[in-house]
Image (cartoon, rainbow, N blue to C red; front, side, top):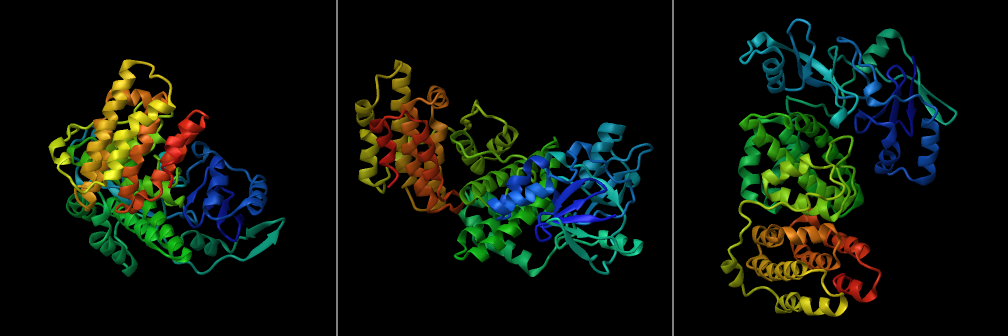
Length: 497
């Protein structure tokens, strides 16, 4: 049997299972995502169209239609091999990547709350797809690889031909450069990413003490959380890189770490124990940070097939994600509401939503010109906008502007990341339910106030690398939502600077 390689060996077609595997990302790609996936690998326009035309001649199955190999089959070439477990109960062949998940399975499916050591056996697992389409199948132990089969070119495709039976079997069991699951790959590169997180990245994240202590402690116990931590560190180094080659190298490494993170994240979302929920909250916060990384860089670090939860940049998703970066409960709620196209959950109030305004009022560091801009905003809006639809709209807008003045003082109380972040994010927590309704119905008054809040986001960008460019994105989106009136739009355009 032959396999087909497309575009300089980037894509490998498995004719037996009728899937197309990305050799770099090490998972199969759904038909609907082919175009965007090629774009993430810097394959543009004409070349991408030629490849899609070639791929169109291949038979590709949807994830649910792919028949999984029987247990003990040779491993599928191009996919990572994961150390996992198989339930040993009679008539059950459920497979999981962690002992915790298989123990929970035994409790829920077999009524065994404290299963013995023989409840599962260690196996090697693979999966064609990631994210919500993840389905494990059991494969034989990996073997050495003697070499690569010869290739020929025909009709714009590259064909990889079969070797002898023994050679083909060995070729399919080739271990990838980066495999999932324990034991850890403690090479020098991985240790450098961990060291960078501990000494640098953690100091740039809101709630830095939690990231330095609690999150690191959890990551040292759980492989998938460690991979999420390392992915953030790699994304940070990509943001700091001055040349494109170094940037792409760190982005590629971040994607590799996220592949392992996704396995544990998909399982943790459905666990209900107290410890498991805390782990899921940490994973959700990591996902919020990576969302921001994806929005500012457009990198392939966060892939909808790889991790469920990628949503387009829009006002609702951005504000909810900001809250998730600092608050674990909000992060978990945000991750559970990714399909929210109408923005019905625009902002989430937290239990600590009441600011100590006395602390905000004592700051003398806020630029007087900025405070004056906020205080004069109601008068400038009155000149540009029509009469408010209701008294409730009027008072909700004034309240939001007053809060903006206080939060501005809070942001400038000091130059550490905690104060800057709190000043920006606490404004979201102070907004009234009526103001949130105004934003959802695209009230020009509410959108203009939100655009002025982006000045606090712009200040936070200087301290939080994963926010760089977010303020401009917010303003551009708001301008697109405002009426096509130059006087109204100028209230936001003047902020573009």
